[in-house]
Amino acid sequence: MVDVGSATGVVAELDPRVERSRRVILEAVLDELGEAGYGALTIEAVAARAGVGKSTIYRHWPGKLELVEDAFRTLKASVEIPDEGTLHDRVVAVIEQVACLVAQSTYSACMPALIDAAERDPKVRDFHCRFSAERRASLVGLLREGIEAGELAPTVDPELLADALVGPILLRRLMLGQPVGPEVARELVDQLLPVTGD
Amino acid sequence: MVDVGSATGVVAELDPRVERSRRVILEAVLDELGEAGYGALTIEAVAARAGVGKSTIYRHWPGKLELVEDAFRTLKASVEIPDEGTLHDRVVAVIEQVACLVAQSTYSACMPALIDAAERDPKVRDFHCRFSAERRASLVGLLREGIEAGELAPTVDPELLADALVGPILLRRLMLGQPVGPEVARELVDQLLPVTGD
DNA sequence: TCGTTTCGAGACGCATACGTTTCGGAGAGA
DNA sequence: TCTCTCCGAAACGTATGCGTCTCGAAACGA
Image (cartoon, rainbow over all chains, first blue to last red; front, side, top):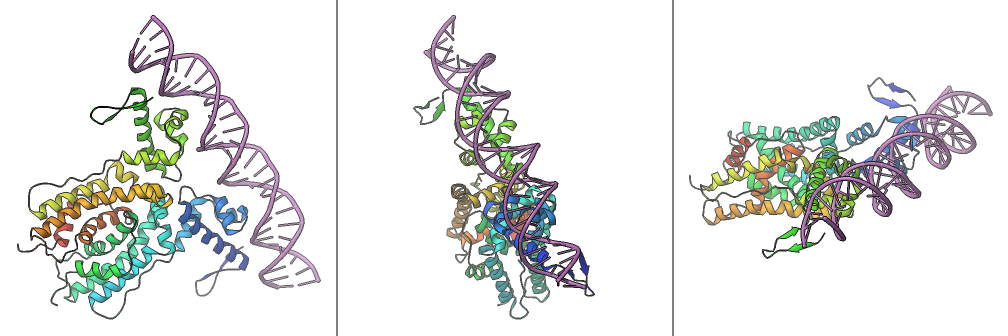
């Protein structure tokens, strides 16, 4: 019942039953969000899908909002920046990851629900924006490196360029119903990255 | 009660009471969608907001889905293509309109709900995608003109470029919580439009 | 004027979800 | 083994929304 901070700063659950309950419940929340969305999400549906009693959910969370927040926090949607290669190739690798993430992943399935929930509740909005901004920052950083290394013209606005690379992927997924595959990443970079020299 | 096709092909409601009821109800639906979203939208809330009885709603629509579809159809979100000016200026004008539309409009308020609803129901999805595709097509057409007129390099993919111009606006509105003003339109076009010659 | 149509209001039975509570069973840990 | 904790199930009363129905008032339009 009580969390214990270990010497490493990691918080460990004493009872494995609690850990297991929290895990299956949060998984069920993400599944429900993908299917029903935020507005139509019910605690009863989550409990049924997770195979737990409602009381177990209310034992660990005060309500729907906190439950959904915790579930979103478990989403894995990080992007890895490759160390080697030309700027062009490194950017392509990043955009490929973004395309895969947006085309098929738990994150992708929950994206519409997340966008909708962010519009309704300030807490979710904060989380969602910070979540997106973190990934964006890594791409912006990569582009900044390129400018400093002289591979990109100094007139380039790295934030605008980052959004221009990622924006179309979102647009096609959310507005056009045509999620793009990773093969489009190279086209995007070829068209939009104003490389200097070669 | 009966629609009459006039000589001009316009369908007119005989009874002004019906016309008025439908109008205030559909307005209320859009307001509710902006506030509550699609999943949490209820007929009762729409009726209360519109100041009509529930029976009046059920008299004109079979259920929530058709009601929402009709409401979305009343959304004005068209983009006008200017006739004169350089390609650069014409594209700027279009992107400015898009930015205004996405920053503040009934359409903007309903966008998260529309995206969420499209994910849940195929009918809404069809409508939403066609709706988005129509606006996209007008910008793509403008870019194609530019290519044919030699103002844009023939290597440009007009659809990709159109998405690269509009995508960032959506990304900042939906993912970053930073809707952009029309002043960003010029920056976008300056950075992304690969004009030939001048 | 007068019959017709639509209206708002509200009651209806039904279904679902809320959040709380109780209780017997089972797993954890000493 | 034995105690303590957490569990799932289910029942609880309440609240809300569903879709239907009825009714008297008001507006339409001929």
